[in-house]
Each structure stands twice: as structure tokens, then as C-alpha cells.
Length: 531
Image (cartoon, rainbow, N blue to C red):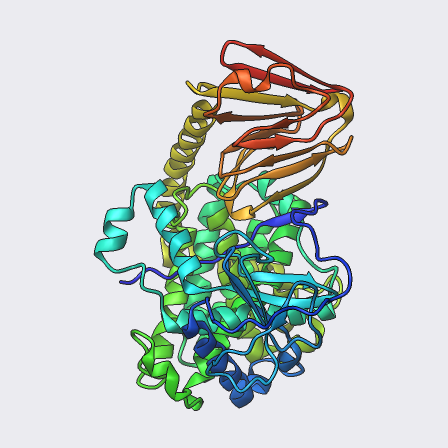
């Protein structure tokens, strides 16, 4: 079975990762040549076609046709569609496309995002903009990830690098909905630092998560309303029991991630439920593997999404080479949020008007629509455990917890015991880390105060405004109790000799200067004290 492509963006928490465009837009020479994948514009045309046809049924009130789209290939070209004005640095695009747009802006050789696969939203010259990387950028990201994970041979042999036209249209739907979310509830989002403290390996929590996702899958795929309601009752009973043992930070993280990402995925799944009503634009049939929306193709995609949810909860999701990190946790919450939203369509159809309010979450809406007594919940938990083989699942999760702790310790040891240059930054003298740029998909909790950050180049700013930037992907160990940041680099320790107050700039990292910075070198170890 073909692997589904995934997308993620780095988060900047209190840290500006790229300079924003400044000043007034000056006249630019027109851009005549399209350098990004032209098939991405076909997907844009189809995304518009889908929403023109069934957009009001997918999500009433979604003003999708007011969302600007920024399409890019890193350091090659930005193409801006549906923008109310031209941002600085952009020029009018005069080349041919499949789109009817009379005004398109573009910029060559410099892009707002210079990293592959950053499918997200951002503010561009005061406009909230949907951002999507073209398929070649996403392919390169996937090839590099599979090479790092040792899976490149099978990835190429099985043609998994050929991207799905269905995935690309759904990607546009998903990310465009985030712009809508941001407009209606700009402050409603999770604290991504909670990933580093979530009990990812806890056997009891994970066994109940496995139970939840199995019940939830069966609820979504049930053929009869009575069957769905019975499964919803089971799901709520199991979830209530599990969450009673979680701290408030973890419950909040689940709720907010299910709201932000779950409703984004919901838009995709709702399209899969309703999409047979759409007649695709003719150009879509030029895409490899595209056969239209009828004949059960979308229903099978929905079934695969639900099966994926169960697999992710079973620790079989190793798409980033780290099934014990933040990636599987986040993807599981994407799916559980979307599945609950699909069920709310039936039992609480007004949920879409309520969900943007502060403190309103999918599980709470579902529980209000399907109330249960304490005795009912106890009976339903016992029924679910017996039906789905909970005891066997729990034994399996105990083994996975032991395996995960061993694997994570190996990753820590690989950093600490490196044969390369080991860099340790001690920041206790200046307070704390003020902000970080990272992806939560690359966060692996070691314990309740230590985590590894990976998958994208990490940057952070300390309280004294000193900024560390890694120039490539390097695993970074952050211990917030010891107040240290540790990582290995290939550059020689001599690169740090005589540095400190003036800052450091090597091929692998930069550290801005500060009067209180002291650097000492002992053998292959470099210690940087921020004072």
C-alpha cells in the first residue's frame, strides 16, 4: 500500500526565524517564467472547484475565496495568488497558467520560506497567507528523510516518491482552513512545548489510547446511526477514564491539537464523504493516479485514514524514524480530532458555530451531546476492554514502553558520547530560553525536564537576547532543569578559540555575541557559558 505523504512546519515560539519584508513595494521587472511545479496550479484550480461545489456543506461560513495562496520552491520561486495587494519584493507574473487569475505576483531566487515542505500559514505584508511547497520540494524532503532513516531503497523501489494528486488537493483544503481558524480564533492554539512533557511512553495511557482509537474508528465507519451512537458512548467512557490520569497540561494539549489540526483534517475527511458530488476539472486527469472521485475511491481514502489512526496509536508510525517522539502523538491527535468532528455532524450539527469560542473543545461537545452516568461509563469501559482485548494490548504497551526508553537513551548517549565536537551551552546565568524555532514533530521527551529537538534546524533565543541558530538539522538536547543545550558538530573545537563576546559563526552554527559570554575548550568539548 502506498505510503501517504505527510507535511509539517516549524514553529517559532517567541522567536522571529526569518526577517519580514520591510518598506513600500517598489516597481519590479515582471516575472515571465513559472519555476514551480505547474501541476500545483492544477491542484489549486481543483481545490477551488471543490469548494465552489461543496464548500458550504464542508464548513458553512468559510470564506475560502478570500485566502491568499503562496506557492513556493525554496530559493527558486514564490508565486502569490488571490492577494489584495503586491508585497515588497514581488512583481507581476505575466506567464501562462491554467488559472483564470488576472493578477498573480511572483518573486524569483528568494522565497519567504527557504526550507522544504513548509506547508503552513504565515503573515506576509499584513496578509494572512496559506503556504504550500510544490511537489518537488516535498519530494526532496521525503527523500532526505528516508535516506536518514535507512529506508531510501524501498522508498525508491516502491515508487513512493510519486506524490498523490488527491493528497495535494487535500493539503490545500487543510491548510486553507487553518487561515479561516486563525481569523476567527487567533489565540486558540496549543502550547507546543507540552509535547516535551507529554507521557508518550506511559503504558497505561497508551493502552487506553489504543482502545479509544479502535472504538473511534468503528464509530466513524459504522453503517447505522444506532451503531455509531453505541460506539460514541464507548469512546467517551474510555476517554474519560484515561484522561482522569493525565495532568491538565497534557489534556489541554490534546484538546487544542484536536481543535487546530483535527478540524483541519476534518475538512479533508468531510470532502472524502461528499466529494462524489464534484466533477473534477479536466486537467486533474493529467496527474498520475488520478481517476476521479467516484467508484469508492474517496470512501477507501476515509477508511485508510481511520486505519492509520489505529496504526499510529499502535506505535507503528515510524515515518520520521522515531516512533517514540512527538510526531506520532501529533498525528494521532489529528485523526482523533477529525473523527470526533465527523461524529459531531450527526449528534451535534451546530458544533461548527461553537468550536471557535475559548474553552470549547470537540470531546466536550461530544460528551454534552451524548451524556453518560458514572455507572454507564464503568459498564462501557468493561465492555470495551473485553471486546477489544485490552489485557493483551496493555502487555504490548508495557513492552513498547521499555523499548522506547531504551531507544531514547541511545539517542541521548549518541549525543553525549560523540566522537565529534560536543558543544554545551549553559544558560542558567542569564535566566531561561526565551523562544525557540523547531517542529513539534521532531520533539522527543527524555524525561519531564529534558527533550531532544530534531528534524529541522533548531534556533533559540535566551533571556539576554543571545540567539543560537543551527544551520542544518542537528539533534539538540535541551535540559531545562540543568539549563543546558547540548549538541554535536563536525567542526573542530579550534573554531571556538578566542570567541565569546564577539559571537561565533561557523559553517554549522551561529551564536550572537554578548559581553557575558565565555567559551572554554577542553579536548573535543566546547563549553559556552552565558553570564
